[in-house]
Image 1 (tube, rainbow, N blue to C red):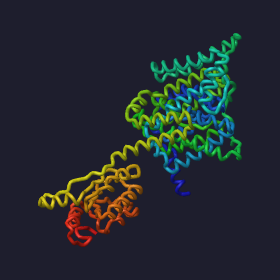
Image 2 (cartoon, helix red, strand yellow):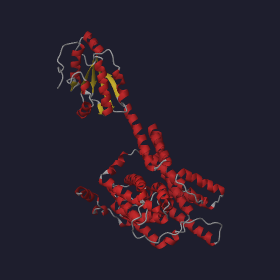
Image 3 (tube, rainbow, N blue to C red):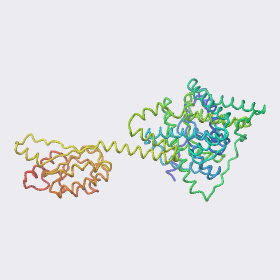
Image 4 (tube, rainbow, N blue to C red):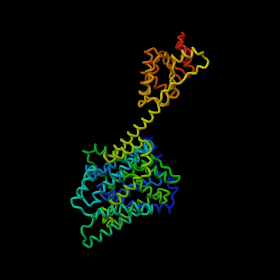
Length: 561
């Protein structure tokens, strides 16, 4: 308990967190982020199936908590597209209360990760996995918007089925108002974002679409667009959700997926923020603590699980944010919108929000990042594509596991290719020609280069096992960079086969860090004598000459005990 408390004190907020606060820059950045975040929060709330109000609550509560307790000074948190993808099947299976329970469980898991120092593990996720995952998420977000963008009401758990059903339903009774609105909003956001980066074009377009749709409805126009509907005009009182105890096992599994995604996306976003800003370095474990507390707080007010938002964080940094005050300002302004303008927010057309999210999906796919990876190596390209496809076809945690497995396979394949067994010449300048010929015929020295592990061991030692017409084999171990249990086992087996055929094996230059593995796996026991171990290659060769010349000797002669 004392250790946990000490760890919490290390991760707790401190006065230095606010030392860089700059009212002018931070308040300006907070306003800009709030303008960008409003339509996104509404859209992701609707898209998750819990409702627009839940999206706003999440942006306010989780955004404020993560800003205060997180590990990045410029990170902005709230509902995100990636999290929405995970939540849709949870809502379908367990309803809104199930999502709130999942959020609480995920918050506890993130706190546990923070206390155990797991935040630094993000550095081991390969770039092709990250980019493939991001590209797959972008595809899913775009496909999720098809029902709202086409103005049809269809539901399905699998994203590809949902997209197909939406297209089929629209084709049976096509209307053009919703598609034109969604496509127009998406196209203008993508184009204008390149011209005026940082300008809240999404908010302007959503307001324009809302006004146009309201005017159409007032004039009795033909089928005005469907709107968000009523949203709360304030934050609900905090309360614990009802726990469906019968489904707790499946909810725990869902919480693992939410926590894994929250940790991954938040730490990736913080890394991106570091790269965009000068002098900013996030604390990964504090970031997990902040996200854990945010996900404990958000469900208590009816919000959905949250994570850091890369797009909103980027806007924050580009708008001049210097400290946590900017993200906190964004949350306060969104709360003000809920308190003052809830009635007007409810009139926003769903098609306009769909256009905002489609544009977000398009902007997530960065050709400048994907193209070099696809051209780099076949392993990188295959890992990226596999991760992206798995993200769309499977759930997100499985997709990351597939990506890591693919990256690990290609990394092992590349590393195994660096392992070599190379015959090296003996230094015999002080011997007569006849003796040199005798040594050439009966002594051979091999140098083991690179790693000796499970992916390389068998092919690596196949040549050695087949060596013939020699009396002594000297294995130079000093260039061996790594050895695992499989490599040591195969080496022991190879030495045993050679000794059974009358070939004496000597080892030289074994590194101290490899001795324990070789001893435990029986490599030394396979040698004809325990003193056939030598500190240097010249000593081993000198001893090999005694064997080759059939000179009587003690086993330890010329050897170091």
